[in-house]
Length: 448
Image 1 (cartoon, rainbow, N blue to C red):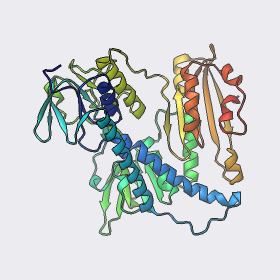
Image 2 (image 1 turned 60 degrees about the vertical axis):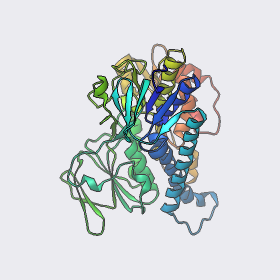
Image 3 (image 1 turned 90 degrees about the horizontal axis):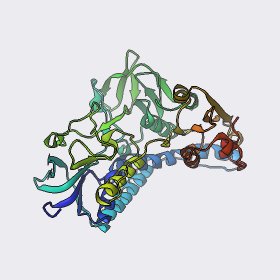
């Protein structure tokens, strides 16, 4: 490999790119990575991590409201957006520094500039420098989709939401996927009036219908408004900086912020893939085989840019598997069944495996067990919200096909349950397990 500047050049220093770089270097490869934004990628810089910190911050509103029911008197409650925002951004910088240190400690060179492909074994940096590599890995992730309508330039995406100068009193969110529902919950809990507008009447497509219905019911009771079947057609900006957002043919909505959360698409524009004979897929994704190799034998791709499953842990596993396969003498790929996921809405959802509808289509004869309960904490705090757990089972083998949950701490509980589903356990295995009482998690072994 001495004929090349590096054994591996990675474009994109997000979760998948950093993992692939580190593991390849540990196998003895000479590695470099280029990142045009900040090291850490979407999850660390403008996604999962800062979003979850905002979720934690917003939960205090509920905790403080409920405190009096537990004997606490809290006076002078006041929320300061700037304090929360700046604390989140400081932590993002801390983690970025840690990611950079990981590269340095593994002797991975990093270039803080854009890189594009100029051939099967060559990339060009924005500064003009050309670098050769035996292998190239593309890990540029995905980017928010912006629809086309008049005034869309006045709107923001999840990239910008963490940098708002002032906390908005009125927020309009277009979209009803996980990003939309998470930020709807955050802004609603912190005191903003939130309106969700969507082109259809379906929210959180892909999750179990019963959970989606329960979330809609609870969030409406919490004050979130919904406008279905009417995507935005115009956004106007007034002289005072406020906005007027028009959903379909309905009356305009007054807003301080309009957040577009209509999905993300693979970030492949302008990468120069044509210089290596790589054609994009219908969604702008980079087609790859089971081992993340593209149509060009020397170029691979992992993470959201391939549009397989857009989850950080998947990108990490794909990056690790790539490095082991190409540089570690251990050819392996990533398995995509029984992948757990969560929506950090308020309350949160979590799921693994098949939904009830998917299971009926695939297996026909299934059983559905459920627990519809009021969390103990809500009883004492006079909250009427109810949790819902569902277990979908193959009627013939009793094997668990899916578990779906909505309620406080559902993601934390589901992680352990996902192991059981992945292992192929049965309903009888859950029934034979003693309940951990009193807890919400015990409902998993008490479902009927």
